[in-house]
Image (cartoon, rainbow, N blue to C red; front, side, top):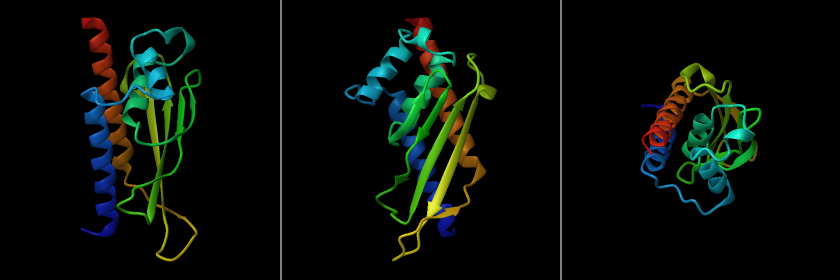
Length: 156
C-alpha cells in the first residue's frame, strides 16, 4: 500500500468515526454550531432554510471534527477550513458540502474534498489528488445520518 492510499484510508477512518459518533449522539451540544444543529434537527429552524433540514443537520454532525469556514443554510453551502491530521502533518484536507434541494434524496447532496501535501522541511502546500471514493463515502455518511434524523422525528 502506498502512502497516498494510507492517507486516504486514514481520512476515511476519521470520517467513519465521526459519522459513528454522530449517529450515537456523541457530539457535544455545548458550542454555538451544535446549538444551531439542534434547532435544525428538531425542526425549530426549518423556516429559516430552503434546503433539506435533515441534510443540513447531518452534514454539520458528520463534519463536526472539521473547523467550519462558512455555513449558509439558505444557500445550502458548508465550507470547511483546512484540517491537518496531527498524525500526518504533511497533508491537509478541506471539504465543501452543497445541499441542492429541499427533498431528502441522494442527488440533493454534493461533497467536494480537496487535499494538499507539503514536503518535509517545505512551507508551501501543493494540491494533490483525492480518491473519488472519499467524497462518496462522506456523502453516504451524511445521507445515512439524515435518514436517521428524519426517522427520529417521525417516531418521536
